[in-house]
Figure 1 (cartoon, one colour):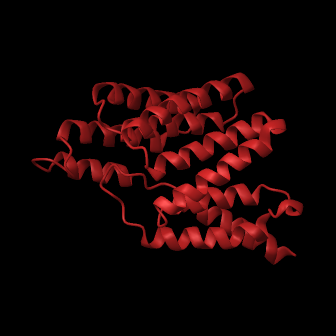
Figure 2 (figure 1 turned 120 degrees about the vertical axis):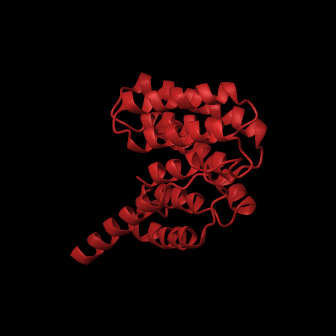
Length: 217
């Protein structure tokens, strides 16, 4: 609904929006609404294809590549077989690589790269420690570039939450990171109507899960 309201406002606005032409912005907002509403692999695939078409037409824009990759990552975490998961991760990786050529220091692409690494870790546990080192290095870099980006802290928290307590993970270790992420969400200023704004709901859900579990103990 939020995307739909913004889309309607943009359609009624003359001139450019945040320096972007109306045709591109309107097309992106319509596709963002579709991806927000998507519940199945088929619906997400439709959105991913739409973003890819926009990226092909607007080769200087990074956001279509970003959202196409995000759709593919979301599909990789859904209930699909291993071959499909690997395919979605590979497509997402190619889109991340293309996006980072346009924006080499964009922390939002680094967050997506972290998610791709997590997907690979699930598929290849034997290589998990090597991938975890890459994730940690990338997370540190992203935090140094964009210390106020809440999605960086959210994804680090999720990684910690899913680690065994013996290795410094688990819900108790993740909770402070989630609280830090929530503080970042409260103060984060989006860089335009097409900027990434996801993650707050996920952060709230994880915090509630941890608090509910602690209350039962």
